Image (tube, rainbow, N blue to C red; front, side, top):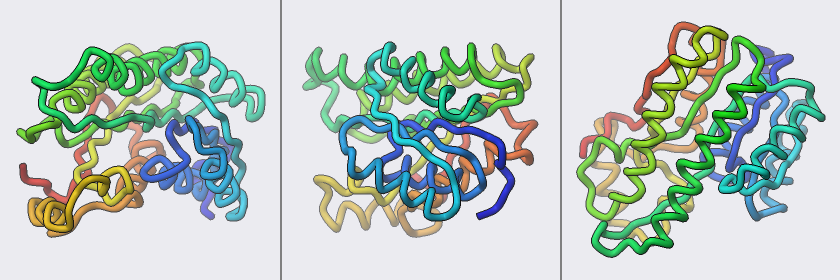
Length: 248
């Protein structure tokens, strides 16, 4: 465990598994106290907390539905009550939808925008009100916003909105010394990424990167760790593609 983030408190949404878990573990290992947000899986969230604590860090699990503003407020309240301040927000919670635009129902559209856009927007709003000066916000976007991939239209639309929230909020929070950036993963080896894909399809994604492999959650966590650290204090309003040179 290193001490770069000692004395800092981080909220990581969707942190019970996959990329969110890797980010929570990385920030915990850097010394931050971590609020591990999750939606459903109590056991997975508890395991993330236990892993952070097992490395000498501090963490709590907070179950909150990021589609609901009252529950986002509860997440911030619990974090403040436990750790006293909020210095870092990583908006990772999200859902995916793989369907042609012509087949997406109103209910599906509303659900993906509620999680991927509404949740990010109102978490950013609360951070703007409550985050300590000099804080860090990182929104997890996606490299699909730059790729012409069939069946990703709805998902890419939500991440395009996240990109614009990031850019505008960076200007609004600059006077407080708060940086706001987005990280856009490419194909990343998570259970959600692998779901419904054949080995041939996964290998095809690997070949489409300059480095010849799909990413790992740790690759994304490393980029987030850079952006929330002191070395990135002059980086704001940016979208960092962490995708191994993904070629669409």
